[in-house]
Length: 429
Picture 1 (spheres, rainbow, N blue to C red):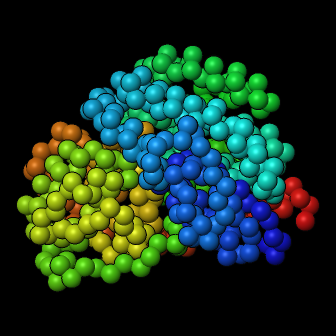
Picture 2: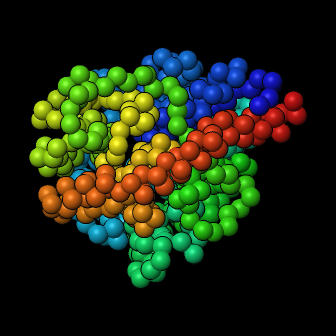
Picture 3: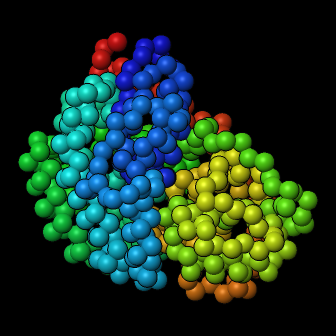
């Protein structure tokens, strides 16, 4: 920790996962006395100032009519493209993954002039981006650039680990080559066009088939106990977890306080919960079990009815809930996966898109949870998996030890230290 005071500009992706990660780290920096500014997408207006940060927001597209909920674009996108989640991951590359990159790139191009103006106004000592796509303004500003990767570390592509987005196992290379070939086929033209545009803006060329540069300092969020065995560039630093401390305290509702059975948390994330049919299917199965459930209902909360053994709301203070529960049912988003490990909780994983397949597969192959086929599991499979995990005392003890070590490493403050170090090395202060 340094006594010097810096201005830190955070540029998170407009989704709850990356934004919450930056909020957690930014809160530590703010409490250390640094000025913390968020160049978040405009739908986050007011949500970050409420936490004590400055906002200097950007539009990623022409301003829509009416008030927009935070991250609304991606909620709508997931809702409208949900049928693609039923396809094998190799088929999703052309029909879902590529369109996501196209939308991200369109946002980058639209907001590039705005970001340059923000940098001029804010005059940051260090710029921190938690996203998967390059914004040239951030790497041409002449300031230290810190990249955060709050997603499965397979996004650091090397030949000795499974291809990202595939959900393939680490111990079996069947299908790896075919998946990489399809990624190249479906994405190369888009990458070449974006890379040419990035260079036109004065930024360095992008790494081959990557849509973002590395920074002088790079952070990724994944515990050592779950990480892949390989050697990364020394500029990469692992955060075993990054669990924000800004969530409000949680009191267990009276309806669940004295009930029987285990207490289980169910969340498909702010985006996955937009798949209303899947939410209702899972809730319907869980209604027939002897356990109690806390349900993160998401953006369509008004259309989700809960049975007597459940309680839920649109938004929940997840990091305050996880220590209270016995098990987590999750989509496999990186925040929820690493937070469940942080608190030592077993998982049932129902992946939907992007790196969720990789997280689900990794937890399954390491024995920290069970990956189910999200759209084809039977009632008996889900119920049986719950009972098996809840009865596994050896796993409970193992995860308790894993969680204790993750918490000891305090990734949140390690991240703040590294960002301070990047700022200090450039300013000479």
